[in-house]
Image: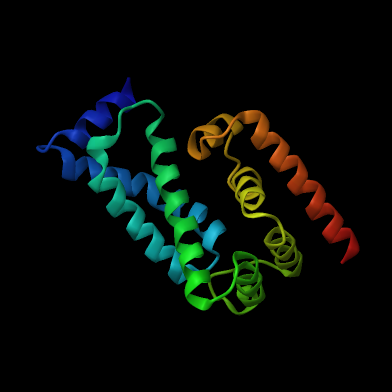
Length: 179
């Protein structure tokens, strides 16, 4: 019931600005990490995060409450991030795999990435996965999002998500054991 009251505040013109500021405060950090896991670059992440909040604000009136607010906002963020990397790859004239590989190659120089050599190897292994498996793996492994929530965000069955995660883990394990 608490979420319903918050959604009502978001939709009410008198309380919308205050409620939206709360939404930003509550979601900014986790959404940043979620988007960063997809686009990898800090500056790009900031751009996608800003676009996500703009889109959420513009489309609040379309939220029907058929899923949790969390799932709806994350779905928008996920779609914005995927659209962004697809457009970036297209602009550069490369496919998604090449773009992801170039991003992982730049992680060491990124002042906003504080990972060690093992984490860079992990990101290189993840970059070799198909886009859907990358997304599922990152959401489950790094963000610890429950399969049920992921199912709402990605609009895919829990069973398909578990299978994607399992295949991703196996491929990553094989890559890491070979390298």
